[in-house]
Image (cartoon, rainbow, N blue to C red; front, side, top):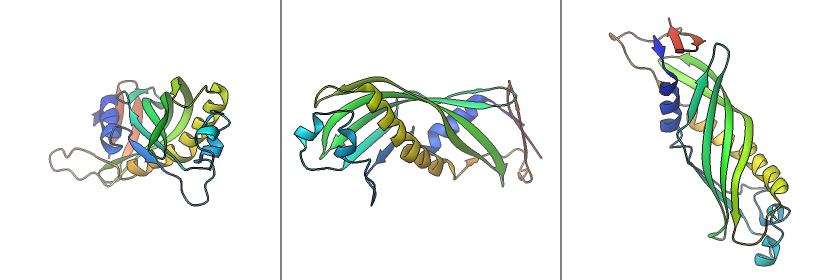
Length: 186
């Protein structure tokens, strides 16, 4: 059976809730704190003199764009990102991430694991002062690599249920890529 790249795109969007995630500080983390963000936005330390936890909310601004050839599957995703401190929005970003996708199939499901290929901040605005874009790029790239990507992969871990055709049970599946789509056979 051949599945189009749109099948993968719709599957990713459905499984990840449109690439929506809220990233909060976890125990022991120092980089989701205002002190870590102060290198990129120096005035944040004046607005919040005591170290405060940072909350990062992200959602897809575009539908995942999937492209494939005989060797690779690439997923491009635009994201709106908002950084909040004590409920106050301090930073808005438009981010573009390109992922490499690795596929596997078993028990009637298609499994996708993403790895970050490239990352870019398209636009940023801060309500607490000027931004050092290079330091902001490094900070946000670390957040996306270390927190957002594992969240997305966690959502994708459930697998996309393959359609049932003539009541055939999908077992021992083989996957092949072509420019026309994803070929899954038994």
